[in-house]
Image (tube, rainbow, N blue to C red):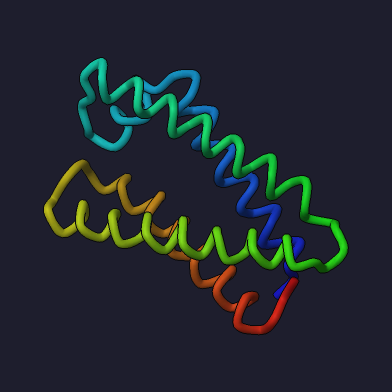
Length: 124
């Protein structure tokens, strides 16, 4: 598995959901069968901004030389997507939303496994 491909996949995944949440946060919850009040929409926009930041970071380091900083970004993504996967599992078990909830869960789970593999392999 190539580290550049993992960073590109992470950038694309984060940018799609980041832009969607930051710019049109009312529509994403509707796709997943979830309703948000104004407070939830505000938090969605903030989270969307964070995802856009992750996407930019992934895109910028995709072709960089191996470094300890890049290894730490890999570790950060393991924690981000790993914790998100656990939260998605709780939502799925509780029956929240609809079947579309599997898409972000599978995306986070895949990124956790992919970046975890790279980290264990010693990628920098």
